[in-house]
Amino acid sequence: MKIYLDFVGTIVEQSDEKIGRVNFGCFEIIKKLQDAGHSFILNTSYTGKDLENALRLINEESWMFFKNRHTEDLEIKPILDVVKLKIQPDSWDWDEMIKNKTIFIDDYSNDIPLKKCCMGWGNMVNWEEIDKQFIVHKIY
Image 1 (cartoon, rainbow, N blue to C red):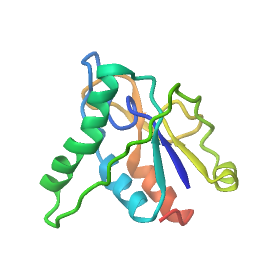
Image 2 (cartoon, one colour):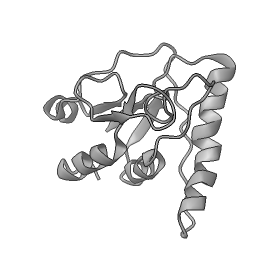
Image 3 (cartoon, rainbow, N blue to C red):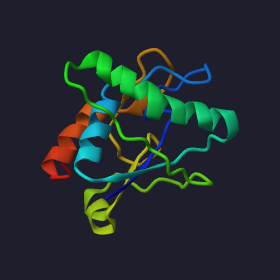
Image 4 (cartoon, rainbow, N blue to C red):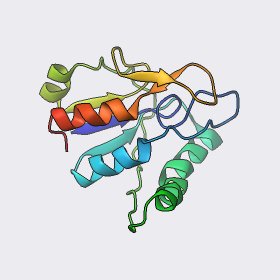
């Protein structure tokens, strides 16, 4: 499947800072999806330095974050594809996602599981719940 991955509210919390705190569980599930052969496209409105910082967090700092939490030597493959202009995410509808072979992991997707931010404000993607759904729908 092709997975469009949002940044703010998905990988990191909503925050008044430039980049909020990492959303718990996101890197583990991205790793599972990568290992299952799915491809990622970063779907964000970030540009310039903000985009560079987002990609650095995903592609470099995520590895260190992941390594510090696990004993095995695991590495997240770089996410290099980025949309030129953010695409409005589709609804979190399993019939449509399977039919179109496309998933939008984005806090703005209608009906996507959300949870309250821990340190920032608003809601963010609930990776724990999404993980359960990926297993049920045999995404990995």
